[in-house]
Length: 274
Image (cartoon, rainbow, N blue to C red; front, side, top):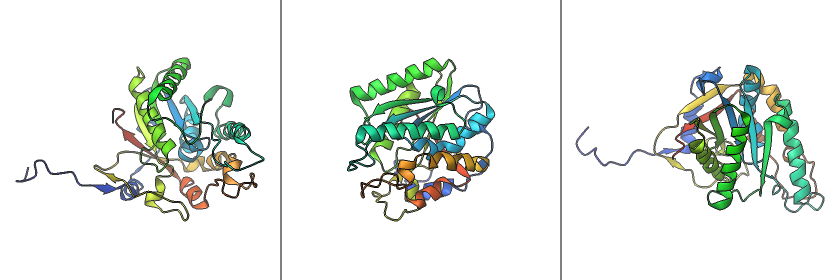
């Protein structure tokens, strides 16, 4: 150690720079890079569509390789078009559930067996408290019901600029800590990619600073791009003008879709206790 090094604050790396560096990681072609032992993958999606955008290739590869996978959508997705007379919140939530069933079927899952919905309010996922604890306990029961140990939990990146995505990270961390199989915890960026590749018209907060480089797996999924595109397209309320009576309603920007349809997906390995 050089003189004066002790007690020095670690260097900080911008989130965008860190993600751009991760884009250059060698591509892994096998799921063994994520978890070499037996067991299933449990994928948490804060909204109906995040599972397809961030993990569509992973899901399709799990199906192709016979790795058990369960998708759990945490929120009802009912806040994307808050001023639509034709799609009040209960109708919109029902539509988004229907879209997610179609999406995971495109990826090879059986929606009646491999997909669950917690139905928590969109834009209000909890990061702590009684509702948070109830959500984690519900997920533990789902994992128990599967009858095989969870090898890895996947959830959205804690630096994604969306409160529900941050809350999903907290839920995923608590779940990974509580599962007896001690699974690995991976996070996947969705809106966080905007720090690395700005999306026109998409507001981002100040870029987070990271105290250490990212680590994880860049999974090659070019052979599943067709299924992934179909899965994302199944979320018609978010990708088309299906809901035309709310001019301020949400629609996925083409630039965000272009980032999702690259031939890889990024999974960042994290400490569940952090």
